[in-house]
Length: 133
Picture 1 (cartoon, one colour):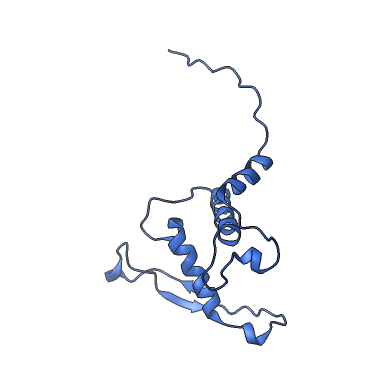
Picture 2 (cartoon, one colour):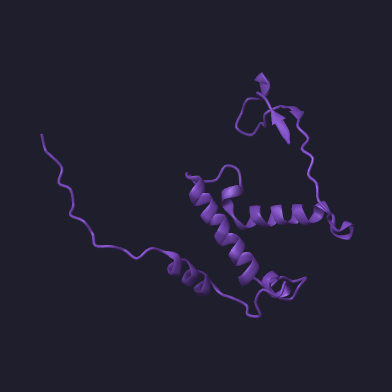
């Protein structure tokens, strides 16, 4: 994990990154299959997310103001990526390749999932009148 400090005085502009002041190493343990260890997979997924979603780009107006909204957007992206898109290398969706489903889904299916989980709307309350003083 990189630790950043203040940007140098001469390079303070909106495109200048902060200065890297150090790193912190965290040991992650497990038993991965060494044939499948590659940073290429992670970097490819990072690129797909950045290109498919403008909220990860710099200097854009597509921004999540709340963490909850950002998580909802990521959930939609991953459901679409894994269930609705045919990938060239697999010639099917990743969910089909993993054996989770045998059907290529569409956005209507995704919207149906969202609608099924959404709470039913209740009756509207009265409008509040403003006091004119």
